[in-house]
Length: 148
Image (tube, rainbow, N blue to C red; front, side, top):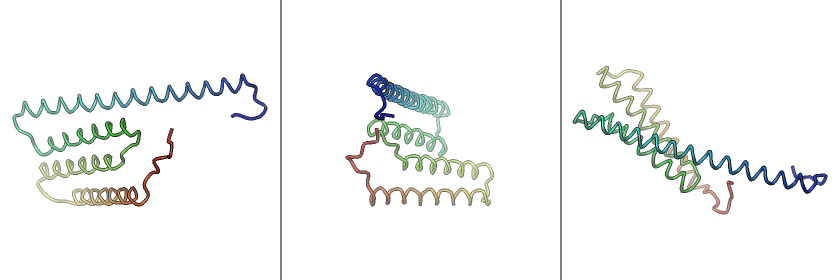
């Protein structure tokens, strides 16, 4: 919005508003990341306590703990790099669908089309992960690029 007819006061106000807006977005962004991290740790802790009370862990319980681990790692990587690791979201989705398949098999005790479709979902997610990895290798992000 910096055109030739702007006064110095308008330019100064414009610059300050951009800086304030960037600050507010950054504060909101970091606050939400802390919130997600705390909620993940909280949920994982209470899930772990429930497992300890049962004195046994099912495969679904362990996969749920892996989901919490992946979410925590994703938040940590985002804090360090300011980039969302899409591959971690795919891993979470694969783990969640695997949990659903195991739950279906444990309750129905038979294979059906739903389980086949979930297996195909995992295959598509795995292929998506391979595509993302290939694209990251073939077309890496330029380190000099500024995403701010």
